[in-house]
Image: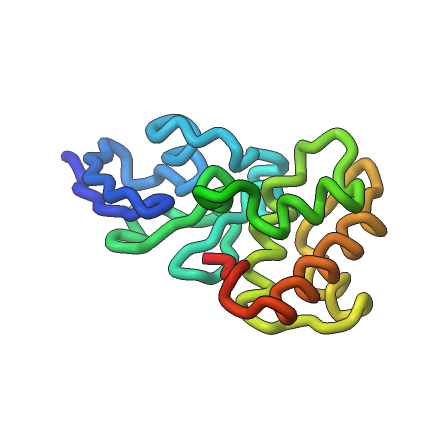
Length: 165
């Protein structure tokens, strides 16, 4: 038995056929679409390394069955930068040393993009709370928080230029 699946990933339509209804979005992205920026960390929804945006909202791709999202629009770290260069969040992470080993960085950035889009945080404390589902084993939290606040300030001063999705 096969299962048809239609997704729009980073603006590109994909018509796929799955042989197994248990395939997660994470495995589909990494193994079938070769978008390996989304990381498999804990594979249990506890670390946030697999965070992507699904229809503009944050989601742990390791917990989501691909078939449950037929017709959805997905954005991964590979689709965040625009034709003019890095997304403001990506640039802010570089400017504020918001990463060390870099393993969690794609999930951190995608979660931050969703958080900003959802208008969930406006202070360092609220940013830390909204990002609490994304773990960094290197402890780069100060840089991550500073980068997100910087990107939020840039968006506020230039509305529409750094839309997350």
